[in-house]
Image (cartoon, rainbow, N blue to C red):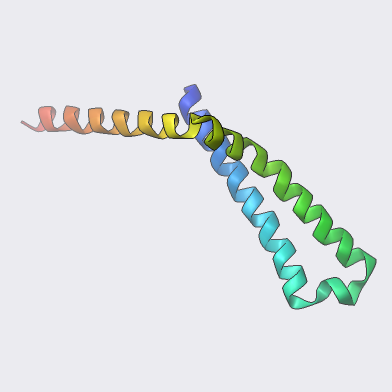
Length: 91
């Protein structure tokens, strides 16, 4: 597997985990479980927000540095080249 695919997979997994952690924190606050369980609910929300931050660092840095845009443009070029090969092979 080349580094382009590895970077895309790493960023995708990190982004999914970050959004999932944020969703759990929002769900705990929205359902009122944070207030019902006292300090445990507060701790759960803080841990979820910390996990969200940790997993969001890599995708945010990739977006900021332009790496993600570069990776996606490479992927688009490779896909276009593969389509050309298929068209040539069919003809």
